[in-house]
Length: 330
Ligand SMILES: C[S@@+](CC[C@H](N)C(=O)[O-])C[C@H]1O[C@@H](n2cnc3c(N)ncnc32)[C@H](O)[C@@H]1O
Image 1 (tube, rainbow, N blue to C red):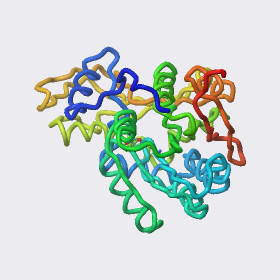
Image 2 (image 1 turned 90 degrees about the vertical axis):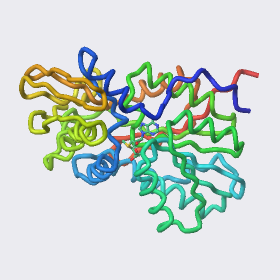
Image 3 (image 1 turned 30 degrees about the horizontal axis):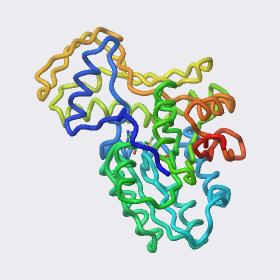
Image 4 (image 1 turned 120 degrees about the horizontal axis):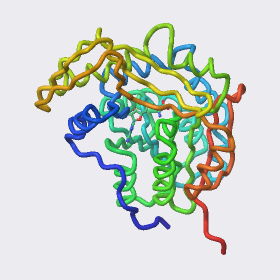
C-alpha cells in the first residue's frame, strides 16, 4: 500500500525561475539552481555532453542498462501490468534498452517520463515513438515528487521507478536523503527503484568529465546566464564570466561555478533589480557528488530503502542500485 502523502518539500510554482534567480543572486555567496540549466538550449547541450569521450557517466550507465536489463525486471512477473516511471528522464536514450527488454518479456507496459523540461519531454516522446512504436508513453511535466504523487492519485499499477544519470548526486547529502525518503514513502511495498550513482574514482577522470576539451560543459554552465537574459530580460555579458569546476576528492564533490571576470553590474528587467559583482566573485550552480559503496548503503538505509542488487559497468565507474522500501519487521 502507498502511505499518506508526506509534507511537500519540493514546490514548483510557475514563476519559480524568476523567484529562484532573485533569491539566488541576492544571497551571499551567490548561487543559481541547477534545475534551470534545462531549457531548449540546455537540453541540446546536455545531449552533446553525454556523447563526449570525457563524460564517461552516460556510456557507463548505457552499458549497464543494455547488458543487464533482466536483473532489473527479475522481481516482476512477466505478463503483468508494469509502469516504468522515470524521474528527470532527459532524452531517455538509456532507458530504451530496459523498455525494449520489458516489451520482449510481454509486460503490460506503460512508460511515464517525468521532467520539468517541456523540450526534453517532446524530444523523448519523438524518440520513443520512432524507436519503440508499440510502447504506451504518458509524459508528465513537473517536479519529481509532485508529478509522481499526481500519478498515484490516478493509478495503482506496479511500478519500477528510474532515477538515473546520477541526478541524485546533484543534491547535498541532507537533501538527497530527504528526496529518497519522500520517494520511498510514495512507493508501494512491491515497487522498486533503480538509482544511478557515479562512484568515487581517479580524481583526474572526474575532473576531466566536467572540464572537457570541447568546452561544452563551459557553454552549458554559461547558458544559465543566457537563459536569464532571454527569459527574464537580463543583460549578462557572457564574455565577462568564466566556467570553473574543481573536484574535491575528500568530499567526493565536483562543484560548478560561474566566475565574474570583472567588477560589473548586471540588470534583470523582469526582477526590476541590479546585481553587483566583484572581480572573481563566484556564482555556485551545481554539485555532482561521487559515492563509495559504503556511502550508498548508508544513504539507502537512512532513507528507508533496502538494496536488492547493485549493477556495475565493466570498469566499475558507475552503479545502478535497485532498491525497495524497507518493510516493518513482522
Ligand atoms: C542531468 S539530466 C539527466 C537526464 C537523464 N536522467 C540521464 O540520465 O541522462 C537531468 C534531467 O532532470 C530534469 N530535472 C532536474 N530537476 C528536476 C526536478 N526537480 N523535477 C523534474 N525533473 C528535473 C532536467 O530537466 C533534466 O532533463
